[in-house]
View 1 (cartoon, one colour):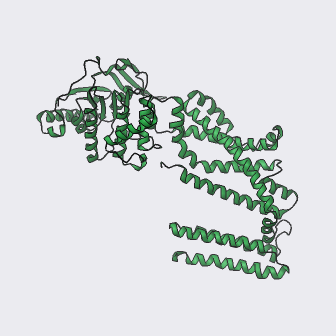
View 2: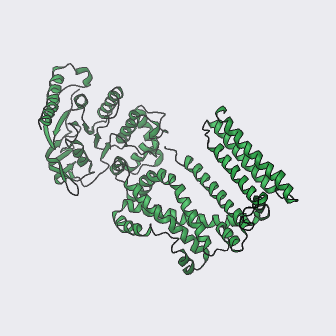
Length: 307
Length: 271
């Protein structure tokens, strides 16, 4: 801990500066003080930071990372606060003050949660509808040469065309916006899942394959008891990339004409020039992405027990 | 003890290889791994195929396994032509014989379930435990291969191969990556399992590049060189061989085998 004492003090020096600006300077300037939500957000950030530090100390994996990141965050918030509330150098409409942005969470939390739920539903549907068939077709192609010789060349053409490019078209031809969004996500996940599965199966340890062949297994047993478990560690470690891809697809899909969702919330707020809500929406997307990728990492660490 | 090559009631040899050849084909190159191999193995024999790396010994084994088809000639097991792998043969590889996603016991039980059909899962599990005990792995059945040492993994692989109750037992340099002490234990284990495999003793084909290993285990050593069987020597030395290492017959056989290895060295150096 001694090693990090200076960094620790530095972080809290900046925190003190930030709090001074918010509580003293800004309050004096505004007359009425509306920094409550912002203050709570700062407290939560500080809490997370302390949790990271103590968790890292316990696991003896502490690095300078949390300290540096926290310092940067405080500096950014200071700059943001200074340029909006105190010095008024930022555009008064385009750049809302942090007090206003964080206050959005208090006033809009129900709407935001609803939009998150809607997005997640879309994401989960699209993701699994693309991911599982992609893996199954990949396994089939890995085992039956005929499937491979047909599907692999098609995949090589289809995979590099981003679904984003033709997603407006999909929105137009699909009956509902929902089904179009699911399709955009599905396509974004399906081909990469298929291609990586084929490649993983192709790189199977020859002796494992020979051991399995010596048992003269039928095709089903071969695919589901040998090939599938063999690729699972790779699939799990690639899960994060797949989830990130589908999130990207989701946010694009939602820009096309959704009526709900995180992407829609941001898009809609911008359309009505409500940049306060837009900024808050972007922060929400960041938080959701972080939570998702954390969940995926936790799952990956515990999913495979034979490693 | 005296070895009885073949049992007369099940007439016919265990393995018949006739003019077999094998060529590895690449897009723009060919490599002849085996040429014109003729080989007859009687039931119940312990055969070692020795030779330096690249001599074709593993290729010959894979033809017997049915993992590869000969480019020329025929391979017959028990009088029938080999068309692919079957559960009348079991194989142990140098590494990765076991499936990493199954525990030791699951590995053995999986082999049993797919070779001795009609057995229910519980019976397979019981049999797996029994075989693990026979290879000295009792109480370790729940461990995954990554939790086991190389020697223990090979014990499990041997247990699986024997548990599958095949007629022919194929081993491809099974102890090549094992340290000397553990290797001696595994050699004894293999020999004991083979000797106790009952009236219809298993036929064993054991590929090795270790002359000592071949001399300790084999009824008959096939020495291979550049795709041919250069020497076919029968070893008429009592078992366990470790007690006969000073026997003149053992010494003579060792000398002969070393000479074969040495000749090849000379040949390579001259090139």
